[in-house]
Amino acid sequence: MYQTLTKAIDAENVEIIAGAEVTSARLELAIGGWLAEKYERTRSECTRRSYINHLTGYRMAVLANGCDLNYLPQPGEPDLRTEVARAWAHAGEVAAATRNNRLAILASFFKYALENNLIAGGNPIAPIKRGKVQAYRGAVPMSRQYISARMREIDRTASAGSRDFALIHVYLQTAQRLNAVANLSWGDVHQAEDGRLRLTFRRVKGGDELTCTLDKSVSAALLDYLHKLHGAYIGQLEVEQPLWVSLQERNWTVGHKLSTRAISDIVKKRLGTGKVHALRHSAAANLLDRGATLVEIQRKLGHANAATTSIYLSRIVVEEDKFAAQQAADFGALALLDSVPAAFYARIADEEAISAQLGIALLGTKPVARIISAAGRRPAPDCCCGRQR
Figure 1 (cartoon, one colour):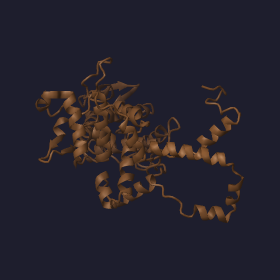
Figure 2 (cartoon, helix red, strand yellow):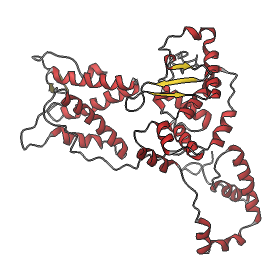
Figure 3 (cartoon, rainbow, N blue to C red):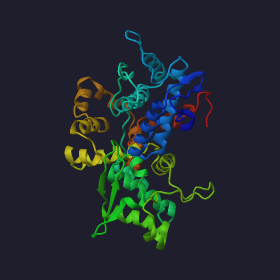
């Protein structure tokens, strides 16, 4: 696909794309060099494709307006690239975070091209204001009781179960992001004298390298998976051998590196959520609950400064309102307690006991809905047409 976007050409040659003339090879070198630099930093094929798709879409929009990415406006003349970027980033009525991400990708390209003297002028994305986004919005951790209960359900005698168990525990213990763990290879695993395994993350966010030493139990879980998978050949593995591989024979992917989508599916199957980042949230929240300091959590998460960690924790940890009971009494809510049937609390108690065993938070709407249903009322429909599924 990249070849359809750019092609090295001689300075004298010109190629027509979407009815517009593509300029010199310097622009093509800028695009190729920028993509190579980004891929070298992340080693993520998914990220590379995303960057290609975004730059392709934006470039075609610029070409449709009669100029190219290296367009140089005349003094006092508006930069068409800026206006096109503003409209392109808002296409599809997307959220502010998505718009900001689109603009960040474009700004990154122009910054690279300008710093390497491959285009002239300024960065056309700089004048565009970014949308306001709440930091770590939607960061919801799972309780350790819930995770523990779900992990105990995994059949570790099977290779898939052994892999999934080790994979999730590595995410929880290292608190690393999706791609960092997904990109681990055999060469990133080292065993200490005491038997513990040390993982080297060579491509964490920001391009830094990070090392994490696993607990003995998690090390044992990872070794169990690797021995089930490779057996006596484990000592002969190439350093580039992916750590997490597919075990699906029916779709011809067995032995291939697990995609991030496949890892998301595994977490969905085992923990009920496809948001792998929830494991990072859960690890951070558990560390705080266990008494870890802000600096220790910052180091674990790999944040550049403590302020970022502080904001992060404020989004994922919801403290109990210690004034709730007093405020309820002050405003007369306690008078309602005498009017609620005892059977209601008996049902609530049963629900809480079950929820406590599963380690999940009780949702007040569930027992209420069941009581209404038991009283003979029709349960609420599961879909908009009013039919019950």
